[in-house]
Amino acid sequence: MARQIPHTDVLITLMGAPHASDEVTTALRLTQSLLERGATVQVWTCGYATMLTQRSLGSDKPRNLADWNREYPSTAALVEELLTAWEGRLYWYGCRFCSDDRGAVDHLPQVVLRPPGGYAANVAAAGKTLHLGGI
Image (cartoon, rainbow, N blue to C red; front, side, top):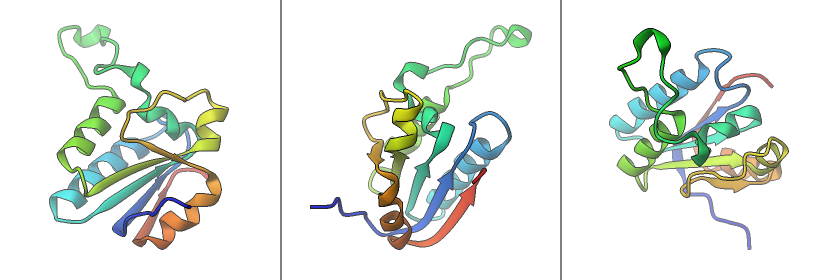
């Protein structure tokens, strides 16, 4: 039996390379803002965006030589913080094909991997869909 996708107000589809532009920051800020306003949100990552939730990223980014004493959270830590704070209102999905193709196989436990054919069910379960990134 196919997995039931919970209805959400918004689906944010995030594609492409995570650090090639401001798309990841935009997606995370938009997700947080929507949640703070009471919306339910699902995020679908595809392409290299599936790398964002790898447990191997740890909790912090490597140190910045220009600001050695400051720590910055990794994308995995930011996503995990959002998923924990908004449990039951935020759902994070990854394209299984894209993830496997890139060797991204150790995701945060809250991340659900789905085949690309399952994306249509995610779209159908959302009131609105926003696409960020390349096609």
